[in-house]
Image (cartoon, rainbow, N blue to C red; front, side, top):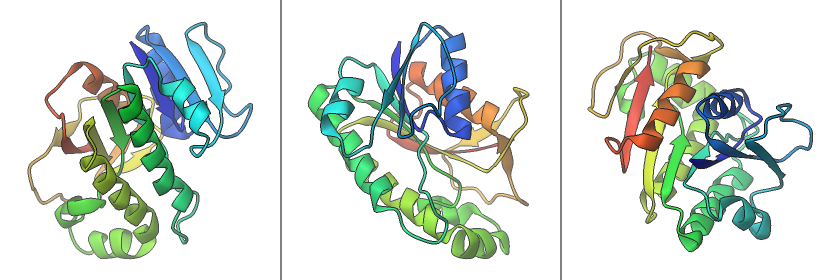
Length: 210
């Protein structure tokens, strides 16, 4: 399968790229900074560009089977127009190129998932500490949901650096979480890649934690 990974040089994006290559996928890593994705593999092609560069987006997306976004804003205090407008560009290019499958990495606390967070964590994390990045994700989720794509939004708990693959809890129902749910980037990447071959969560948002 040919996969485009946006944000391929980020901590979670890097896990997605590594695991995808291990599974035999052909990967196009779309990054903004030259030299920031230090992987040498025959099935990896690196595209350096910004999300407002339409020709680079088209060249990366054309002929792909799916796109995965592991992107995030650059600040926890200032809204990122580049991020939200960039997702619009990805969606528009995918629709024009006939590439329908999009998996978007968001977070618990974005959109209606804010309501499944327990207090006082909801107030401290969603309303104070991460209010701005969660607002960016919430806007992007709306844009994706209003698209013509076959999308899945993945909302993990707090991300950790464990490299162990373990069983995870996931679902779409409205539950009330307990404590501060966390999950490793390794497990998030594995879950995202499983969605490439599973239609269970097409056009759904999924919470995810260990």
